[in-house]
Length: 165
Image (cartoon, rainbow, N blue to C red; front, side, top):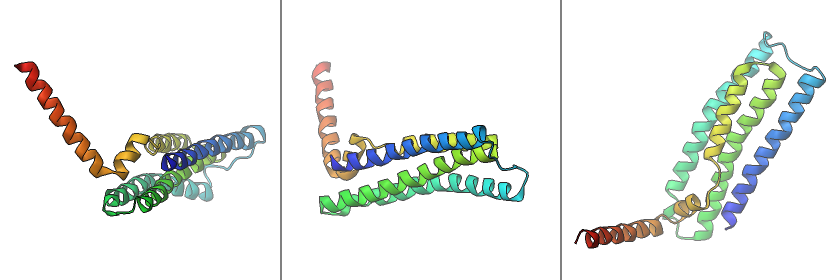
């Protein structure tokens, strides 16, 4: 499945970049002693912008993806559906992943403990963006899944009736 491969690759690239940025931040802050005084106006402004970005980007990214995927079943061309799904899946992963990356780097440079909590929030949100073959199939082919669910429901009902007799 091409869609899952592309989105999974993007997901793990974000995770690898996060690890690399964490190592760079650790190297800068701990080993080389580079840090920003948290009491300066520049640090406070940066800190506030990061908090606003992360807390706004997570619901926005999830809402944008959901709103676009909800209307995807109206598109008759399967290739076009996959292209739109990939585009908005990548946007979702990048928006949430960028907040994670920035939070981790800022934590090492500014040394505000709430930034590590913010990175944790972004990491949990990124888990919700992880591509899953079943979810992708349901999102791209909702009418097939409705029919499958109806058939399974009818089979289950008939099995229950046969057991009760």
